[in-house]
Length: 384
Image (cartoon, rainbow, N blue to C red; front, side, top):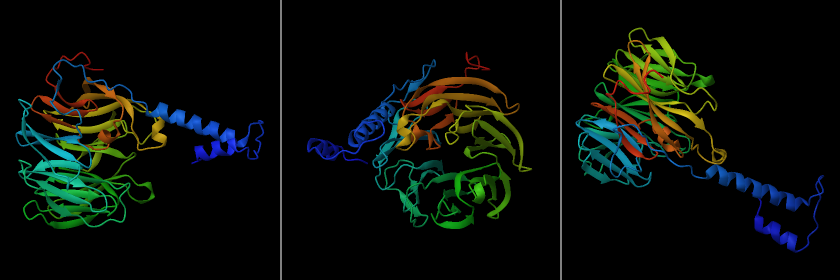
């Protein structure tokens, strides 16, 4: 980039100036363009107000204004706060919303998280991709399971799922899915999957999204009994979330939700849920949860791209909504608006900012962690 001080010094010294066609000295033209770009960046980076949800009964969990993720545990809700370098894990009572335990462990940074086998599990990317096991009180330092060493850090992603008697982890640079024994904390199997990203366990199998060669986009099925790939289902768009339950596998692919039959490994239905405008890499369906014969989808609607995205990691501006879908008919029952905000990039790419416990949805939003009642079938947005 041009040095603004050297340009101004050159002008003061009266150094020879080359001319552009418009008759403006070249140094002054550069200065004008530099100032114009700086102005555009300041406009793009200007903070917009974060608007919290205004739904009746919506409650902000105390101290959660910097929420990073939320997962469901055994009679508890786990969520993270703080920064990436100084994360803090918080265990909360789902009824009173009171804090049951909290701890800060700098050796384990935020990553995709899950609960199971009386523990909390988290996976971190980077040069030393690793899975961490926390005790249920998060007081003891986490136990580390290294997935290997990587030459790359930027652009690497990891994901994690718990189910079928194992912990399953992915690291896209290794082209492998790792199976970890939750008792011995050892890697007992590795399965070759090209560029694996999202992983989910349920409906009798482990499901992995693979970004293969030649722009392939596949949903890969793994049999947990044999540790073998038993099916590969081609997709039209990159999926952003996978959920299982209700006798189906649900894949969020762009603004659509795809229903896969786990018995036949075939796509049974595809229906529109969210926004359908470019850019294509910002999917509208953020996460899905199956509960109470319902597919709950967290949707990011009306995305507005800021100029700052040209110079940094995407921080998108838009509105969140919770969409209730009948798993028998694939029809939308209700839409609950959850407010809007800027700087949601870190939330959108975390994959775990939403869960359902009993009659409430817990959602990490730009304004904090909110508990949203989901039992009101007569919601005014029903059927929209």
